[in-house]
Length: 208
Image 1 (cartoon, rainbow, N blue to C red):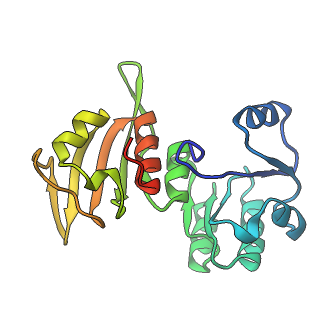
Image 2: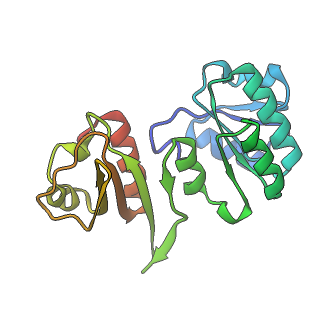
């Protein structure tokens, strides 16, 4: 999902599964083998220049220790962490070791991808055989969302804009002639692949 949203991704794993390695290779995603709690592997994975670090092993202690080391190396990086013990997650947020903590109840690829980019993507639901998600984002200055009125955007992109927030006012199910402005909060409902496309185009300023 992160790659589909235009992000460059590197995976760091202490003991990578061969099948996972093959899948990453097909995606063109680099895999670095090493312990994410150590500076060497983190630096080889490009942490000093990274925007986001996602700690998503199945061990809360490892995720906590990795977050501590990551924060030490790159204080400005956005950290998203998975935890099973909500108490540990609360501590991570309280002491600034993670910007977003997702518990077992939140586990889904869309939720993690959205959190990494500072936006909300719901867990995917299946409707008539297709997967749909809801996305909340902020319209970028050069986003395709600000070029045309809502009705045209919905028709051309096979999506529904269900809410627009402007200057503290929220409009549910906006009229087709509503014009979204840069900085507006926008909630979109669409097939999951369309949601990922919306994120990518909002970030990159691409029209189509």
